[in-house]
Image (tube, rainbow, N blue to C red; front, side, top):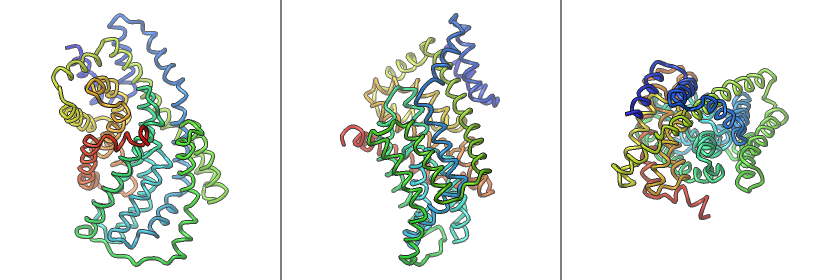
Length: 424
């Protein structure tokens, strides 16, 4: 009964539009006081949270992605990919997905990916005759690759909360990320060929391809540097984020020469705002998590699940439905922070690997990014395209189905996520 009452208050506060950070932190503090626990646990939990070295990667990756966004790197990246695949059936859509995947491997941010590639690709695709709702849905869904293809900010937070290896999580995201890219490409080619109304394009010359590739080469090199230093063990994810930021600054300032002082200040300010928001949510979730742990709510929920759901497939089905419903009212990071401490113990009791479960959670969070009314990528595309939210929401439906289908494959074939980090 206590669990139901706490969850009811939590949802009521969120529906009243109380900011997530203050809802979690305030409710956690109240629970500590009511339960007779020392309220000093709240500042101690916040200090322990913000003192984590791994969380330094979050502002550094955000700063790197914002610098690339303000410097217009997406335009060069899109042009290079389009030069190679633009003549394929639905080639512009394929170029958009591949550009999203490459930028995702640099930034770790879904919002930055959707905004950067969307700014360039949306007018290009619409001018070539692609159906508007398909274009909007493609960019909103393509942006979600930013949190599945490593580096990934939600994976960093998940690793911090669960004390799992962030490098193992990054490696586990590679297979599902590439699978999702392949699914998006196949669907886009089929849709554009028979339903999308696209205009076929001739292949460009070899010289044009080389020129476009050379222009985008520094950005692609940046992705290889960030991923390479992490996977080779040369640097931790936090150190790799610092290297990536320094490299992005050097590339956009001295090589591309597209980063102005004004754009740099905007990038720093936007990074500061986003970082503060993320850290406030993380701190609030830490206080709330401390309180519900003392009330034994995660243990009780885990016990309830294991007593009433005795098969892994039933557990994943129920959890997926719950997460889809939560995605209607929660933003992505809040879902990871609130639900992971509750669900992970039950998942591990049923035999799920915590790294696999982290990848599964990120894919479900991807779905939350494109489900109204709080799907953040929907608003990013709405802002970039000046389009109606209903039109964007209709466009993402087939991509949402594809993402859920990828969850089915991940369940049936766990090595899709676990082979690279543990068996390769």
